[in-house]
Length: 145
Image 1 (cartoon, rainbow, N blue to C red):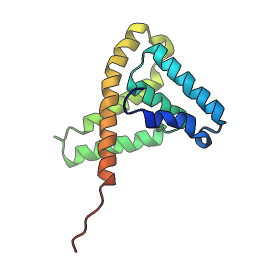
Image 2: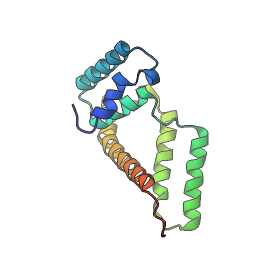
Image 3: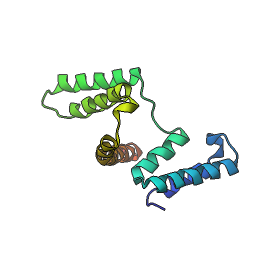
């Protein structure tokens, strides 16, 4: 199995309460996901995203969430116009609008191949941001005595 995924992937067959199914159904789902992934020759990030989607761990994009992201961009620009972190939020906003506007017939094999080539890199960056955030949040606070 791919490195870094065993714990997450095992949730597909162990977390039957969250999946709201029997253990046999959960194991069947795990087998189907793995077979489809191997057939597609997908990346580790694609498999991770698919497993999280099945487990309901993905974040739903909403208009409210977009409004919060836009507010962050505006705040960053007001504080320091030279701060380039606002570009991250601007690009994420572009992706959100593309999801709403792009139709399936707009996607041919070449477009999908080009997109997936950069999506893996973007997924890796987002994963590293998530890890950094989790490490920051997990650090115990030290108070001087």
